[in-house]
Image (cartoon, rainbow, N blue to C red; front, side, top):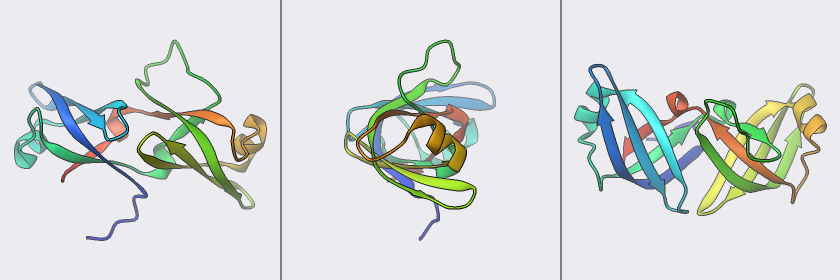
Length: 139
């Protein structure tokens, strides 16, 4: 199946904590980073997720925020360090490709944010992704 979601990162489930309706699934990405996905308990069951399951973490580029360094005092736990590989801007929006260990992420952010953060090739950044915006697919 072809998808418009650009950020598809392979990994392995390291922990599943299931509640009545929702579950927290921790995934170790191929680059060694850990991320958390908040998905429904039904999805965990339907996908047969357990420790050791191979998955792909899917994140729309519009759900990836960028910072120029680690951010403290924020509820976003998925903070993946990387380096800007390329920036493309239009009238209002920009597309920023970020090289991370094991792959690449794309963030769709405003042109104003690209300029305010001084994002150009080679700039170190941290990709911020809320766990509720991470979907999982069985690999």
